[in-house]
Image (cartoon, rainbow, N blue to C red; front, side, top):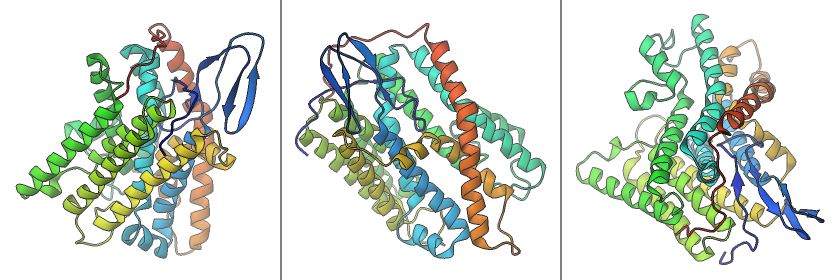
Length: 405
């Protein structure tokens, strides 16, 4: 993997981890040139015109992540042998989550660059994430009201401060619990956005290689210091999200020819080393297995597996090769699926009177069907409004390449 793609591209308007509307390239095609996306060519003859080919491979990565999360959470609840696999061999859910963070790292820095203004970026991000998030929070409140929710106890979360903190999506920063356990990833996503915003102001947001290596170095230093102090287990697992997010940014720089294959390989190796050291030093092996546990080997294999899948799919897709349609179509609704899966399971819990396979089928089909609706009516509406409201601040950045080292 020493070469770099020959035709640099730039990404537009792509917020985060889920929809195909975001996974779009925006560039002007000169007369007589040819666009390639997933192996198909579209000639732009006669005059320059903007085209928006799909980054289907990123959608496909989200589709793969969606399947792994569903397998871990749905299968882990209803299928004993699958639960044992996820808790004792490969932590599929945590590995998939890190793939989502890598996708965000691939896209979000460029979305910020293309917006050219922090106000436009944050308006777009807000409308991308919060409408669907608030819907899932409202559905969780309904479950609590009807006594069908038992994450924080038999009655569910009842403290007003918990709900108010979760409404902001900043509960992690004020010491409040997550109404739904899956919300922890969104807090780390917000932290990544905040870090990028600071880097944008300082003017170092394009130095993806430096930022990735610095992130790895700081985490390794923190692990060493915590280990010496006997507090290694106090380090949050979410720090791995930053490793994957900055790694995704370096992969993007490689796809547009700003980073060589050798530099990319070195960064991937550094990230893999950080994940390995973190797992061996911070995570434990004691205690009962749990789908959201911190057992050393399942988490290590899950994280490294997620890194390998992300790297392979980006390498494959960046060469213009096609990806399965079912994967990128699933990827477009992955944010809704991620937020709604627990709701559907709580509405249709396991019952002795219903075969397990029926319950699992209801969970999967119900989650996918509901997610398709919320994607169409909630997510796409939010995306459209975000683009419209942020347009007044958007400005086109210089087309001159900037070193990403």
